[in-house]
Length: 469
Image (cartoon, rainbow, N blue to C red; front, side, top):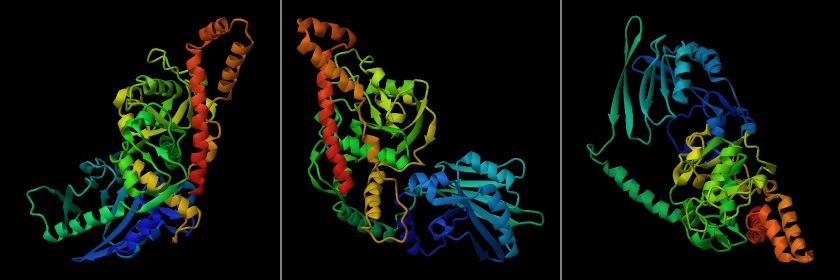
């Protein structure tokens, strides 16, 4: 989750081998993370060969490594041909594949890779023991977060190897390990110290006050959503303002880990969905439906431009003709790549229209928003050469070009036309009435546009600060 550099640090501090059999670093032309392609273990007369495989999307979505920086081989073909052949030549009489796939891909691999004897799988968080029907190959998924693990017993017979799996549940029935308990105290102290680590600096105050962030666009919301877009390569981002919890202005200057955790204490997972223009507009309608209440559903966003009339009935407040995404008018039937947090994607806060949208990258394929922000600051340091590293891999940076055209230019033309109508008409009130037939409440539209212009200017200052930092 924290990039390739961190992987290399952890790898150097461990006393066991790290494998990477099918993804290669274009920078070094070696397996990513300098892992071994295969490994051999000799145990009680057995010579066991190990290889591994994972999908490239898993790496690119979570580790700050971009797709253009790596190359991968088709895992079925690569494992079965080259590496199994190598292990056979080293006298291996049993071959185990370590995988990081979703269950359907694990089943597909087990059905087709006859030369592999056993599959130890990850990624899915549920405990599973899967035996495929065509060859009786066993795949074991041992859960996550050390809640469970597996004890495997292999028994060699004349015709095959019998695999017995014992599931072990880690719970309070086990006595705490004294050494581990002592180590945890040390790590807790370390976490407290890390709260003061400087992530970066800002040249402007960041506004996270509930009174602002739950009723209007703010630069803190812009920043968070821009990072969401950049870290997942999405078209746009929406974030319920209730996820931003600091309720304060973060002053110009140093931005540290404590600031970040104050803003995002809940470690929200992100998810990328495929959303139609129609559903996107429906989500925007929900976002402004409770305005001016300080409601957590009010949206912060990136890559989306829209206007709303706060005096119109909820569900009819968005000016549909002016909604844009990525600088283009929204097509109700077109599909867009939208990143949000799982809380919103699952339909909370009235966003039920998003719950049925196809998932492009689930929460296991995306970093948490907290991690993405940390990686953003680290990426700036890498780009500016301010940190010594063994690799140049980093998360995508926020593209300032995404923010060049925040609102449709005609919106400001409408405001000018309104001003002209009031100035030139012999009956300004009649001019207002005529305009009001086109816009539900023209004065509020004009006021909204003026506020947008102010926010746009503030955002320009924020963008300059992002570039500086």
